[in-house]
Image (tube, rainbow, N blue to C red):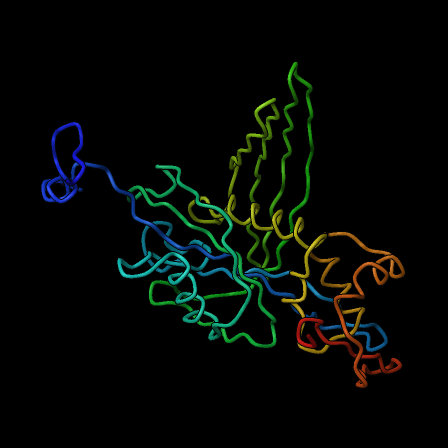
Length: 296
């Protein structure tokens, strides 16, 4: 005998009379924070080339936020998952489909999009700059790599009877030639006996669409956290690299200089030595390494 609900309906009868339109339903988008480590041009040939952490942004070609910079992404089609939508957008805008991709968070503020209720299932992608062929999608004017920086402006911690409240203000800066985009993001953490509640608020945002300043800040903090205990940084170096290049990647992510000896003791296990050398003008050849997972 089929089970019945409190109204006496079987599941088949319940589904036959169910009306989805009775409930407010959001649209869903997949937005991507795509990072790369770009080699900078060095005019002094005696200096090793530096790297910069860069983020891919697109200039919106239509309303809302026309002519404003935004993360790449788009709406999820009815026949695909959010991850499939993210991979589709990545392929369309970078020309590659086999790169590191992880889900960040679902941003669901009902007012984050002026058109309607749009939930953003955000993803972080890490791309070797040597493999990228960037192109703008149909709804974008252009796509560009921006140098990205996240600085802590101040932190205020107050103890409570059963925990603490921590408020940190971050300054997010993104620059491409004469285009400078800035935002101030406030991260509030409230610790109680039941755990930690975390909230991100946009205090100000100049030049970035929607709540994308919040999503970018979330992604940078996630990336900084994960490089300390995973091999995630290897996704930002080419197949063969020097240990100095690997250290530069860590430094641009963490936004601080690292001592050479402690760095190599901690992270050299991520790389396997090869019999090849990199040649830089004005320098002795440097030993090349490869990602450890390629050797396993």
